[in-house]
Amino acid sequence: MIKVNDYITKGVYMNKTKEKRKFTVKSLKGYIFLLPWLIGFFGLTAFPMLASLYFSLCDYDMLTAPVFIGIKNYINLLADPKFKISLVVTLKFVFISVPLQLAFALLIALMLKKNRKGIKIYRAIFYLPSLFGGSVAVSILWKQLFNKEGLFNQVLAIYGIEGINWIATPSTALNTLIVLAVWQFGSSMVIFLASLKQIPEDYYEASRIDGAGKIKQFFSITLPLLTPMVFFNIVMAFINAFQSFTSAYIISNGTGAPVNSTLFYSLYLYQKAFGSFQMGYAAAMAWVLLAIIGSFTAILFLSAKKWVFYE
Image (cartoon, rainbow, N blue to C red; front, side, top):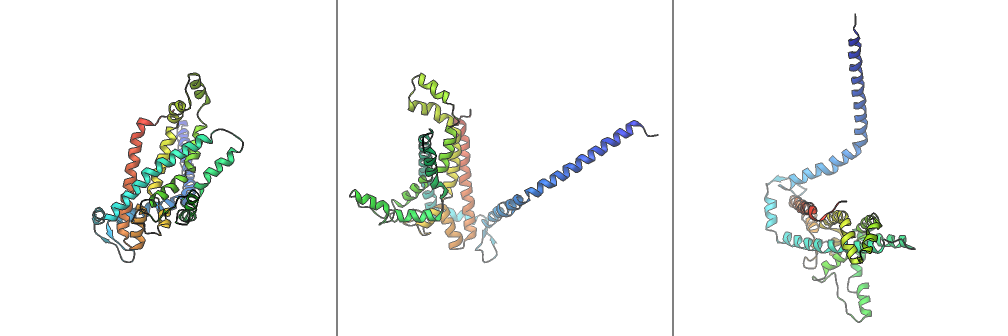
């Protein structure tokens, strides 16, 4: 005779079996929906990264089979003068363009904060350059703007100033690329603008009662409350600046001219990979760049504890 406990045990077992089946079906459906992303991640990101790591340890020209040579490519980097030049040029570009870009973005965001007639149009206009950021068309336009007969020199001529070929002069060529990067501050501006709107107006009213002026309010209220977004924009801007390529390639015709003054790291990497077909050497350069970006990002995250304030 079957006892009641046997029925209970059997029922519990059947419920657990059904739950396991439901969980398996749900998991399968989830993986099916994730399948396009998983294929893209492993096929276009993970596998190419692992392959490039292997090629960085090989003598590889894409035409013959790779030959393993260990860390020889990394050792050759240290003795390559153009590698050092490209690194210096890139660091100079990053540490000048990023602070200026974020400063302009914050300044314009403060100007566009208040709701006035037609303010949405102005916001769209200031954001517009970022939509074309890094495009070939903008780089070609910039090249025409700063050449000897360009619009910039035509404006200077109105005031009796004789201009130079800004993109062909070693002392000014990099500056034109910095100006181009600063001009494309729209994305950071939008983030700052959204953050400014989240700051309670009560803080400013209380500070005005205490006699605080605009400058005091900015450094005591606005800037401390914006530090999370400042941190985010700095990290993203640094990563993007280190990878800058299109503008330098178009303006210098892919050479880094004049006198390697616009030889960005990514441009030199491109020359090695697709100019001289030293793919193993280029892969080593790519991993060094990853290490540099990772180091700077880690430093920013470690320093954030001292100057980033979360509400």
